[in-house]
Length: 460
Ligand code: ADP
Picture 1: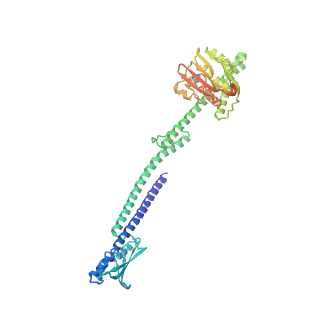
Picture 2: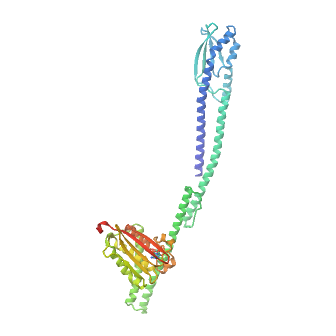
């Protein structure tokens, strides 16, 4: 990147310099050519008068000395061929300086040769108005800079342009070096951090204070590292929880079976139902996990069919009421008398309400209260499950629908939570175009409000 920036700055400065020199050259060429040609032509227009006054002042003679003196004032590159009216050459006049200058310029390696000419012929009149001679004047039509002052001016302009170009080059290169350093340094930090994260060091952070695109990239990287870290933590925590979840019922099953084998416990109905409860726990855990996994990879296909939501909720309440009564929790319901039909997957909706009501039971102290209500609105049905249990801390609320997330981990372990239930609830609602809201205050209770759309074709 550093080399690219360096080269592009160099190229920009070089192109600017060459273009400005070319444009200066063009302007000078145009302006000076027109100017020099005009001055030449205006001084040439005075020639007939000057020649005739030389002739008259010298007693109607062509005086060589006076003619030579006049030739010193001829414009550069101009040549006069003075002829008699009968076309006999009297003399040829040149500015003697022009030849000397051209030679010295050739010596300096500059080519100032004249490429195109113009000619004018004048009649020179004597004192009585008679024609005394003809003057054929030849002068450069695209006059070059021959005046030493003009040349040194143009050279000075070129020199200062070159100097400015050189200064721009040096400053530009220093600036490009500085800019590339500013850009490259944070990018190197980022590359290093990305490599470290790739090697599993998820704590890696980049500190970049700039607010430009690189700063944005660093922020995005940091939050990605944070996400990876929290996913990693959740995964680790989940493994610990799963091991715990599996071990508890398995150990209990093992002890029961050993007790049966040793004849310590009789395999009567009571003991067998305790065994079956443990197996139920294992089955529900594995089915929660399976559903969540399939839902998250987008392969859970709900079997939509007309179902009566009321009977689903009543069934879940029936299943959980022994547990609820055992904890002396008061259960109050406000459900409509008539059935509430919607298009849904019965098994998934049963799991959804089971998880929510089971949570209300889990996180409510003995003698507590659970309230379940169902209201049919215009196009949807609203079901709320409210408890006066331990509540959820405000800082945990945004995360409770993430898988494996449990508020106050030690407490959740006591209640046997794994942090899968609500994640599954969210996935099931997504499949049914439903929504869920939660309001909770620590120590006062929690209220989950589920909204499910009512399908027109069924309600009508
Ligand atoms: P878990 O198996 O731990 O209950 P969930 O996904 O069902 O997992 O719930 C996630 C977390 O949300 C729980 O660990 C618990 O901290 C909190 N939570 C859920 N429902 C309630 C509730 N009714 N009262 C208090 N806390 C709750």
